[in-house]
Amino acid sequence: MNHLHTTLTPERLAELAALGRTLAARSRFVDPEAAARSKKLLRERGETWAASVLMRDLSRRSLLLPAYPWLEDGEMETLVLAEQAEWNQLAEAAGGNPR
Image (cartoon, rainbow, N blue to C red; front, top):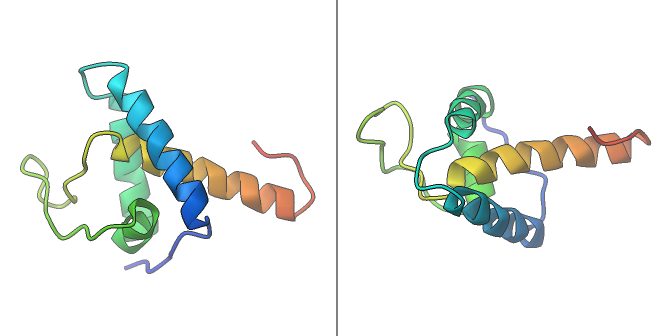
């Protein structure tokens, strides 16, 4: 299992969490793209990374998909935003353009 932690600062994570909640609040329905991407991130980066991004314990399981943690409103979007922010951070550190 992957044991990565996020490289983003707590302040940046708080900003992304607020944006994730805003994105989720735009519709009363779950965004299927965010759901698919967050599941992929959980598989690839692991729950340790996701817990570090969301700054909380992820031991509570999803009722529909017990292999995955329970995510609150906006947390799927936050995971997707955090992945993009980490890629941007890497690109900037390497002297390139963020994607």
